[in-house]
Length: 165
Image (cartoon, rainbow, N blue to C red; front, side):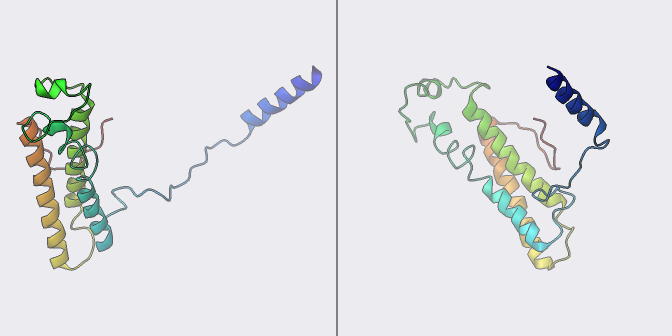
């Protein structure tokens, strides 16, 4: 019993009497937007990130071409639980497919906005900069076209935003 109390007291003393400051390290696997966009290569990587948003499940990776085409004459997706809602136009905001598509499209818009906000940061060839800027502007407008096609009047975001989740 004495041994247990001694061990417990030693542990408490070590826990409360050790370091006064927390160990703070700089993560080496993450670049903040303030640190990124400093070279032409990083701008191209950011542009690839905008293109990647077109391939995820919420966009053309699945939902836009399969799940959300259910209510059209282009597709009949025979599934026991999800076939009734699209055929009756009975989608609502709690539908995970709708939420994933909305989130993925706006994620792509936000990626394009970050790129466009930092397009002038690196020293690089102006012709290459204009090409990257043009592609980013097109991709942002294409993503907005998809949003407007499915949901009508949607919020127009032309500056980068921080994820509110």
